[in-house]
Image 1 (cartoon, rainbow, N blue to C red):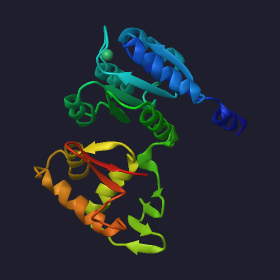
Image 2 (image 1 turned 90 degrees about the horizontal axis):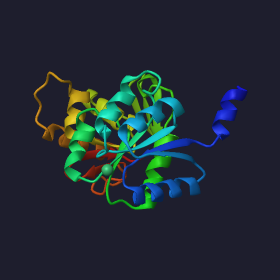
Image 3 (image 1 turned 60 degrees about the horizontal axis):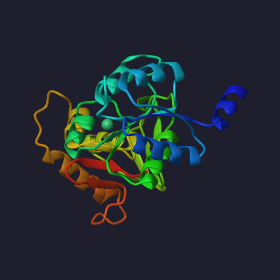
Image 4 (image 1 turned 90 degrees about the vertical axis):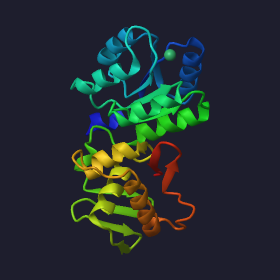
Length: 239
Ligand code: CA
């Protein structure tokens, strides 16, 4: 018990991997100002050593790096058992890399496209660190956000005290979005996770199901605040 309590009050360690010195300094300064313990690396290979030796609570990872690129590094972190659960936020200079980041199961928890504001950066870092750690979200019995509760065992959805009936696919889609709250999921990734690899399903199927879900869970389905559209990419559950 005491170990757990101690761990909670300890400052979180964040490793920033970025080869642009100016940006690296800004990000590090912002995080230190918020009370995080920050270490840095400017090269992919050095970064990999640091991930394994320091076991940070979060990795901020640039894609274009000398020696070892960010996506490879991301996969390496996920593939080694001692580092597999470390949350990763990817930063990228190119919007067209976004599909690769979230679609090809790089394993990143969130991403930011440069240039981004430092306020936005800090908000994403806090959001990722707030997610339950070391706990497999697939094993959670109940996922909740504000007045919405999704019971994974009974497969029932409640909004406040009221039960909302969902079809199987609506339930699976909402569960997938809520498990990954505050992260963008591409239509491809949603199709793969909810409809399965083997299905040939039109991408618009996702849009249609999102529309149905919004009609059931949004206060005003015409201006959704829970399931938001990320243009050109996919959807994000705000929670
Ligand atoms: Ca770079």
